[in-house]
Length: 227
Image (cartoon, rainbow, N blue to C red; front, top):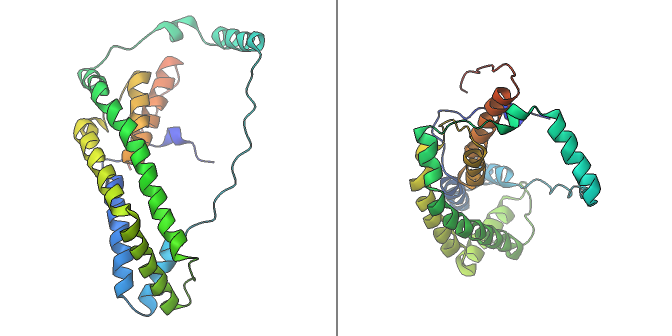
């Protein structure tokens, strides 16, 4: 299993989630205009993996006395200076945290907006019926057309536009901070909360956590070249 803390965000400009969805939709429409083997190849790329089974629920400690003992053990294991020390904010980090009041309402809007967009996208595939597989070109093209017609009818495109408009507001507020190292947990957690804009936000947060853990516990910091 890979260690996400060992990953560092790339300097390479990455597309937003909305841009990737736009490219995916364009690919679907282009596939309907192709014939023969090109249509079959496009369907292979669009085939969905089988859903993973839900993990077993994690048993949580509910006994207050037991929780107190566990918390005391953790506090004893971590030196007090490491817990008490707090890094000073850089100008960039202070500016990032300053946009939080404007960012939070947008996050509260975009999360359900994205969920509704995804629901309508999947609903259209349900209406179109089971994908016939890559071996029947005619059936494959017909299924793709039914998906597009269902999305035209069920409001998917309006949902996409609504979610995209919110994302553009978010991007305008936070895009300049994506690759700036953060030193405090509030700033790092805000990066994680922005992961819906692109997985590179979570990668950037993991890199910050790696540095923070090394500094707090006196571990060696190994600088890795950018991907």
